[in-house]
Image (cartoon, rainbow, N blue to C red; front, top):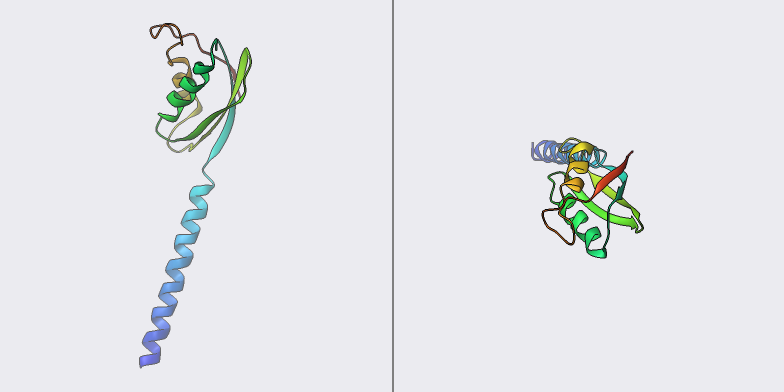
Length: 112
C-alpha cells in the first residue's frame, strides 16, 4: 500500500510539471515583435522619450531604437492578447516633443 501511494504521488507530480511546462510554452508563443518607422525626431532625447512612452503601455515588453536617422526605426516586443499595434502607434504619436512638451511631432510612417 505504501508503494501504491508513492507511485500515485509521483504520477501527480509529473502530471503537474508537464501542465506547468505546457502553460509556460504557450504564453511564450504569444509574444510578437514589430518594427515601426517614425519621423519627426529632432534630437537624441526623442528616441528615449518614445521608448519610455511605448514601454508604459500595458502589454509591451520592450521598445528599442534600432536605426537612428531622420526616419528612425524602433523594435517593439509586445503581447497581442494585452495590446494591439494601434495602441503602440498611438503611444508613439502622443509622445511630447523635445523642445515643446505640448507639441506632438512624432508620426508613425510605416505600420507593418
